Amino acid sequence: MLYLKNLVYHPAATPTAILKQINLELAPQQIGLVIGPSGSGKSTLLEMLAGLVEPTAGQIFWREQELTDVHLQQLSGLVFQFPERHFCGGSVLEELRLGHPELKAEQINRALQEVGLAHLPLHTSPESLSGGQQRRLALAVQLIRQPYLLLLDEPTAGLDWSMRRQLVNLLAKLKADWSLLVVTHDAGELLAIADRCWTLDHGKLQSIDPNLLRAKAEQPPDSSFSAGSIR
Ligand code: ADP
Ligand code: MG
Image (cartoon, rainbow, N blue to C red; front, top):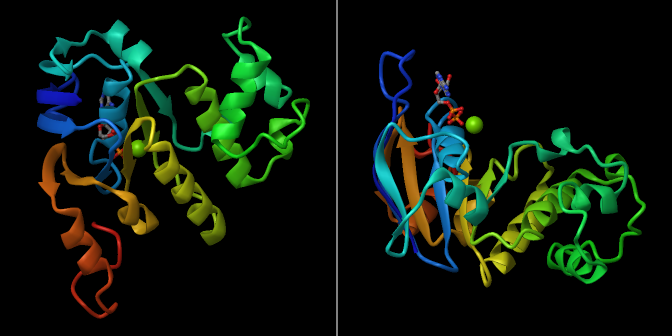
């Protein structure tokens, strides 16, 4: 169970806090979805949970244990927005082994199996993969480290409809073994698989019933709520 308690991020250079008194709970084997417009603090929140940014105030717990940056770096696996832009391996195998030369073939195969890429030859260049396959590879790179918490920044951005569907199905499957926290500006298909939802606006997080959002997303387009997205 992940708990964020009164988490604040307020760098000295900014007039107002970027994250304001954030409280959040996420149970194991759940998908949490944070929906907020561009600049609302979504990526900053994930970077904090990945131990890359230190909170100004507040606490992060896993069960009863308070977590430091170092704990968070071990516990979390962060998949950045457009992760394929950060690939640096010449092959699928190299990409998975980066920083982990000790990994055994069995661990590599298991990670590729998890994301439905077990059929790919290991010498395939990451650049030659389809957009959807690249996203799957980026997920495998994190899964191979066996994190407790998987953090995904705009995982469906830039994918076409069918690849988005495939990715959403994969995330629903991964939920059986991991806790996932997903942030997005456009909930779209992700709403269908969310167990918990929050809106983030100017750094303020507010819990919202996912069923309510799903019902609103199904309303005709002329309603006051635009389908699946909050702005
Ligand atoms: P989102 O991912 O929702 O688009 P971000 O988390 O990237 O939002 O950014 C939230 C706001 O915080 C933006 O206005 C961004 O410019 C600002 N910001 C992020 N990190 C810092 C920092 N270290 N110092 C100053 N401003 C920052
Ligand atoms: Mg962002």
